[in-house]
Image (cartoon, rainbow, N blue to C red):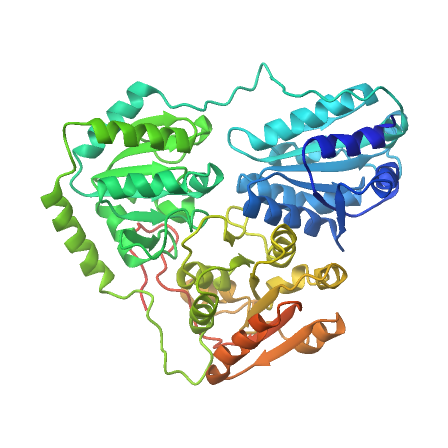
Length: 562
């Protein structure tokens, strides 16, 4: 078989049903092989960045690896943003890049870049395949590395002559890599010590992140939290890991987290961090972070433990395995959580809750973005897949759309990539053709990858796009208002397109909504169109800010409130 045919067979062996990509000279042998089969469906995007974001959306919503294919040179460099995004958010991806023939590597050949060198800082691993006989084994390794331990993107760079060369196809059933052995089970002694500490807590907090979702551990987290009776807070990436409708949930924490979540963190005496990495947007000033807490940290990645915040009891292992072991320890322990202390702790938390930190003016004559998200949550009954771009709209979606299930909130957390939302929604919709998929975006973010409206038309993707249009780069404007004395340098959008007409030009349904009274009707009408992409352009209050806000350099208890 040719290398191109081997490539396709490897995907089939891995159970890959969708691949997102854009053709070019270096990968034409592969595209010809894809043409000759019907098991792996190829989705033609309009930009390579979108191919990787779509693969991310697919992976985040299915827990299966996303796959992208791009050509050499600018194809590979256009994909870098998506690869870096997946690396920051631990998304299992395998990204295949074309390369010039091996005889030309290093000659500055047409459309040649050092893909391995460029991607090295933002991948879990990468490969350059120089011999067709190594191709199948390399692809097997790529999928294994991408999906085990802490997931992440793996890049496989394939020269054109390798895809033309021939050898016997042999795909291994399983694989072991001597230098790569992720820890699955947590250390029994550390688990026992952690449970002993937890049972002594008077003001415990469970701080859970995206690792809970990646490990399919939401059910175990819920059982663990119910046994303890402790408050639970999620990171931005962890929303849905614990049901938002549950009374023990105190909301998202961090820079734009709820007052009650941040105050509970600040006053905790025992912090149980599960599948979270103490990101700077969570901790604020690390010197002021959880000053009275002893910290238990569960993570599959040993490099994440004590990297940003020193912890007292580290447990390296798969989150679900460790949680189940901790549950077992709790059930057999002679000591039980201090119910009187917990009662007093919840009384304090409920006082913080009474602050109603997410309140906003519900009688405004202008559309409030919070109202749009609340209405969306109500009309979808909290059961939609929601993707977002990055900025104020992302934070409002996180605050006001209450996720009760994992894998429903698909956003760019670590890298903060504008342009992520629409292509990610494509990947989600293709993975879940019968489900409601909503992309929440802003008028600045949507223009980063708006060409993907063409892809949506080609493949009949009935995504609902909600654009919260305040004619500003909203989060930039908010920072300029708070910290730059209102000097709005380059944050206002002076020449926006008519989004309604633009959506219609792409063959979709466009709406322009200017009054609060029309918000509910527009969303209902859009959701009723099951087979059409609907682009809703909500003209929102330009002055609205995201609250609460922890300023840079401040502690979690030093929030700016409305």
